[in-house]
Image 1: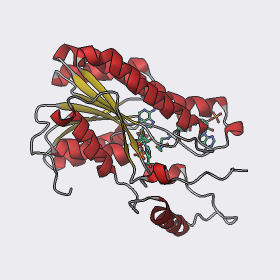
Image 2: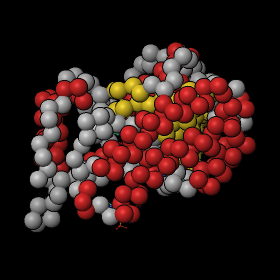
Image 3: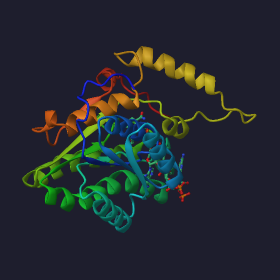
Image 4: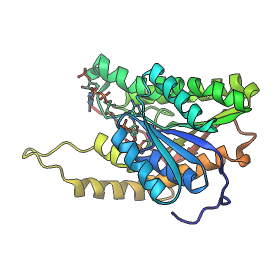
Amino acid sequence: MSQSVFREGLFDGQVALITGGGSGIGRGIADVLASLGAHVVLASRKLERVEAAAMEIRADGRKASAVAVDVREPERVQSAVADIQRAHGRIDLLVNNAAGNFYAPSESLSPNAWKSVIEIDLYGTFFCSQAVLPVMRAQGGGSIVNISMTLHYRGWPLMAHATAAKAGIDALTRTLALEWARDRVRINAIAPGPIPTEGVKKAFAPPPSADGVVDVFAQERAMESYAKKMIPLQRFGTPEDIAQMVAFLASPAGAWITGAIMVVDGGEWLAKPPMPSPR
Ligand code: COA
Ligand code: NAP
């Protein structure tokens, strides 16, 4: 990791629950928070994925554990949170990062495809937030950071499910911030710009050619040219770019910030030209 701007031990004694913490942006967030002293609990469906990530973090001399949770299942979320409270006595930070996404024309989205993405992103964020509230209230406060996006600011073809879910997450961020401020629980969101994680590359992989071959180099070249032309700061983001904002919001520097949605995208959404019709 590059040298941190945050002081060593900033999150000593604190516990951070990160959904989807075993890959991509969630993993980057886990690495940064653990390097600043937090015990990070990584939660996702695939236990082997979060366990492997937690093991790597522990191998670096940091504190991490893993739990299998499908954020769409409120009872499972509740029981995982109860287990974390029993084990650690507190949860200082929840990062609602788990999500699902893929490009698909709205008219062809099956009810289950729509439901899957809305349930992972929006319901999952609500269920996890609701589950940690009593723990945070009892300990005198806490911080929740929701990972949103920018694509719903103007709309984004082929992503009706995810843009609707993330718009809901933004609304939830503001509403819960108002409701839970009296419990000293701060709720904020981060809207990342494009970050070429493995999950995103897989979800948006170009269709294979007639002979079944996916030209990954063509995808890389297209991405390189996109970054140069379309992102004012001329590069894609990294998980660490998002992790630094999580650390800021969760730190005492963010003590008077709640209900805010921080865009971390190299200026991409401001500069976006009108979208051509997908037809
Ligand atoms: N286009 C259209 N429909 C799709 C699709 C695609 N590319 N991928 C999945 N679906 C549909 C499935 O066909 C299914 O609908 P059906 O039952 O009517 O056939 C529905 O979505 C659920 O798919 P399934 O694979 O059973 O769901 P899941 O709960 O196992 O997985 C997803 C959820 C679909 C969101 C999956 O992509 C996922 O696990 N994503 C996590 C990683 C990710 O998306 N990373 C990017 C982060 S932003
Ligand atoms: P990713 O690596 O695919 O991460 C998604 C994570 O969510 C995986 O670890 C996955 O783990 C977990 N997950 C999926 N469904 C789950 C469920 N039902 N219950 C629990 N965990 C679940 O993708 P990413 O790019 O890092 O995305 C992370 C976040 O950033 C998402 O909220 C995404 O919308 C947001 N974002 C990303 C970008 C980008 O360009 N990368 C841009 C804007 C916003 P399991 O499979 O083990 O469950």
